[in-house]
Length: 85
Image 1 (cartoon, rainbow, N blue to C red):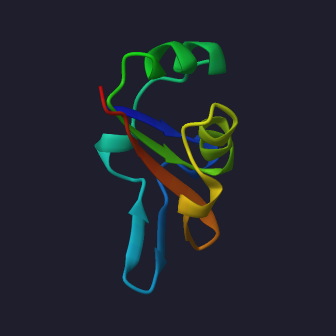
Image 2 (tube, one colour):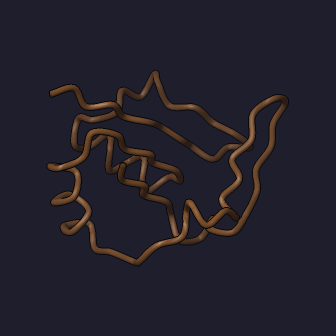
């Protein structure tokens, strides 16, 4: 599983109705990486979580995420990708 989250929203919680993005959990903490390094990880991934404008935009640009399948919580985009082998 690869998790990519915009740095500016790490540590925050977003709620809207029954939906919540809790980015304060250790699950979302990791190392800062370049876009090229992230793309390399995507080649080996089977499950990808993308949260934040830049992260989701990368998924869209790479053809991994369809815009109509993006979930928004308090305006923060989130998408999950399952890659079948």
